[in-house]
Length: 324
Ligand code: PBG
Image: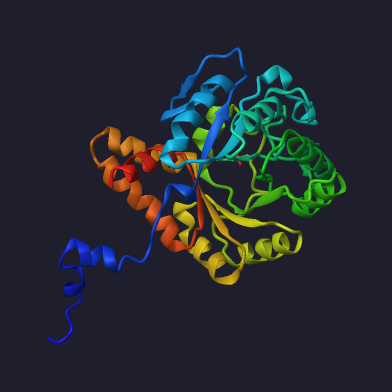
């Protein structure tokens, strides 16, 4: 045998020398569930270690994350039911607790990056990402609501707008509205290939945002489809997206890879709540090692082609990273 691949694995220095993929805390975005200020921190049942928290707890959390190298956060509001309505009007109320938190966070931590969620579901009494009429999700009726929501968030100081709704034309509508209002520098990370996935269950529990009727299959993509992701990517690119996202991540590594190969934009992947819950559950039972399986999972997403990963593991990964 002249050729022995094992020679390149014979010790740690050689293995490290030829390592192909790196994952650093700076490439992670940490999702946070935000509560109104008077409410106490609550752990999410299906997501051990992840809490809904109010602004003051969040400030402590950010203080703990910055020295670990986690400086990017995506915020989701947990809106009380009585504030939800058909038009998601609370999302456009300039004094809502979400926009207030963005303003105060940018003041207190000018160097962090904050990303928002743009969709109707956290504020909608129907629990859908778009406007519902007679059981249908009306695309074009939804667009101005999303555009206004994005402008409110930009006014509050958000760095990156995150449209997670999957309406057609929303990236263009949001880009237009931002530019008309003088927010040319506010970025858009589009949820480009967002699948109608079973892995969002714990997130919907966290925000109490599950659809009241029907499912999200008329707007989120069919898990069986990959070519269609190229079509979504092409449109989002033409409409001015700055990043393209694939969501979920682990069951869609092929889609991440495809978009990375076919686009010049940075590719993000959302390692979603169900993926977090799945690993935590196995580790809780002692069936997997958290310290070993968690970084392997994140590395696989990076290796598939993600430049950026949104993940509930962000802080734990950064803690591990700081020890090596
Ligand atoms: C909704 C939204 C969802 C997630 C992010 N934004 C859920 C959904 O589409 O129902 C899921 C994130 C996760 O599961 O971690 N606009």
